[in-house]
Length: 155
Image (cartoon, rainbow, N blue to C red; front, side):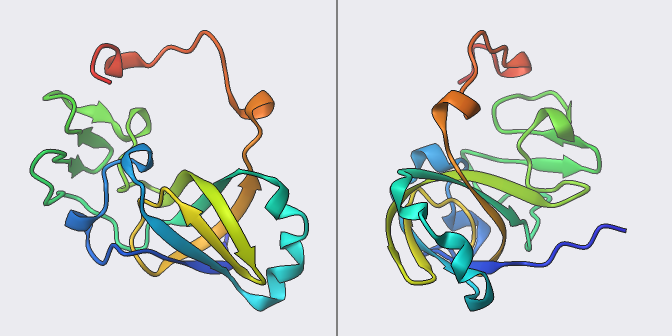
């Protein structure tokens, strides 16, 4: 059995589903990533990176989003996302309702104050458990000749 232990907590202005944006790229909101003190040493040199990949737990999964424009219906392993009327497999969507509720967001690092990271572009709920942080490196993370499946022509 895999057991993940949070390394911190993410603080955002979003208290419930209807307040959080549907994707981080539309967010200009500032949040704080509080890394627990026992992991603070692992932040050494992080301030040299402009962007971070944040992995976290969807601690309040949403089966039926209350967002009118970005409605989401999760039916087990099938999802009806807001960009389509058809059902798609959960692994072909970014639904927060997943077998392993792991979220991923790329944020802009504004500054570090000890074990606190001020970041821009948060889309997760306040109190979200932080699982990991990785530096965003375009040469490693950006791909060419990308296909986007059923999303083609919709984004």
